[in-house]
Amino acid sequence: MRLKLGIRRLGKAQRLIKKLHEADVILVSEKGLLHSINRALQGSKWHHVMLYMGQGRTIEATPKKGCHICDLMYDLTEKDYFAYKILRNKRLTNPQRKKVISTALRLFLGKPFSWIQYLRIVFGRVLHWNGEGNKSLVCMPGHKCNAHSVACSNMVAMAFYEAGFPVSDRHMPEYVVPKDYEGSRLLSKVSEGTIS
Image (cartoon, rainbow, N blue to C red; front, side, top):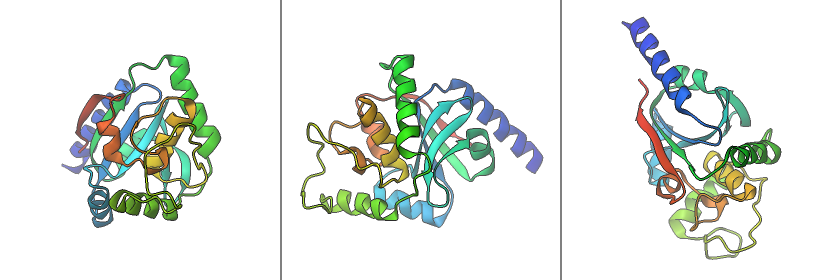
């Protein structure tokens, strides 16, 4: 029975990866108490965000590994993800998609995960305060991202923003949470479902 479930999960993962384009945003939910708390704090069904790079790889920021490249097939088959949602900016050309990816790699690859930024995001969103003397989380014209404070959801948002294609017209990229991707006027749902 376990082998059958593994084969079915592998098949689902392969079909999902075939649907992806560069610069697609992947939202996932994982089993576990800490992930459930994370979703509750962010007011979202999703707790983790990844940026698809192509060739079955993503760039993501996690507490253990910081900002790194990972094998999406491994993630989908070996981790306890139970649901996913794929979002895409369909207006982007292929060169623009590549620009988002190269921006993410240039700015974030190898940076450590910032628990301080995670707390800023949570408290900032709950209290509408960004902890830097500004009582607003609204993105102002000419804003420059702080690429040194990386968590998963803000890393993807900052990559889009710094490449010239913001995902949120409401919040600064540093304070974007998973539910903001779903609410973005620029991102469309490509696929959504369960993994197991």
